[in-house]
Image 1 (cartoon, one colour):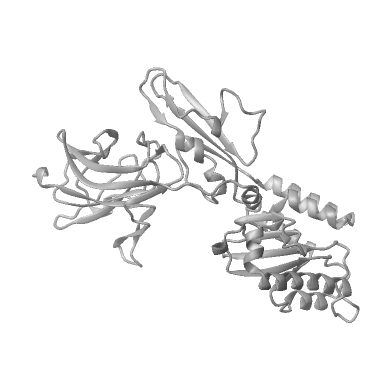
Image 2 (spheres, rainbow, N blue to C red):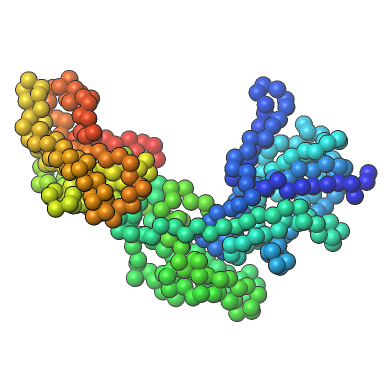
Length: 427
């Protein structure tokens, strides 16, 4: 068979790809997500060990080997992956599964498409942003079949408000580490980023990311990496709910089931002690995951509303909402015997309504005073957290929580506890 007539074209990089059965037939199709030729990352250098590479091919494939080569635009080779082709029937292989030798299924006539998972143990390292050429190497001859652009996206600064918002996310990370090592002489450098710098942990073995040198050069001078982007952006995965795993990086979650369970127990114990409002404010501030039901881009403690008022918490959400939260005591009376709102609860609602009135009248001034980008807020609403569930008629309490309070939402402290309990059940 004339393998010289075999042709292959590069389609691009896909975030996900699966070869799946088409309905109830024995026919298969590709489900592909995020096919592109531009890959954006906060960090460089990165291992090219994620996602799928898409190809179109035609021609005979019996007993043929070829290599996929990645080169920088200037022609410098940075990595190579080897592939084998073999003639087989579609039903003779487990289609769409990962294997040590990925396969492309090619019909006898016409073009076929295939997506090959990048191996997690790849040695291909993308050292810096830029244009990279994809080549096929056969019989020591290279042919360019496509290209990929790797682009740098600098993350938002890790401000106190951003850190507080990250702490409301149950899937957030507390620490990320990076390792750069030469496989020949074994010389290496390790760095870490976390929500808080650990001065006791920092040592020559693992240094704070901002203290990285600009370049890592191994002792045998085989491996060399520009670390300036890592030195600036290693904290970026801390703010991502599901950061992409990198070969040279380690990820430590902010919360585990045990830690959330401890917070829930401590919170319920605190509520039983009938704490002052200031104690509740401090506990939530120290454990902002209690506010996880309000997705947060930024979380403010005691945000001023011009010079007139001060909310207990302020949250900017990904949905471009600014939520102003008023908390009252856990002993705040919620309902009268007849089921109407008690005076202390009405006072809390009136407080929030006053905030919203000022915000409506002086919206831009309020946002500017909090240093909130005007483009990140489209709506503003309030939340009142007060009292406990116990001691009230169930129907009256249900009506209180279900009634339309306009732009203000109402929760009890038991609602916060139940929310954390529900989160635990999903972990």
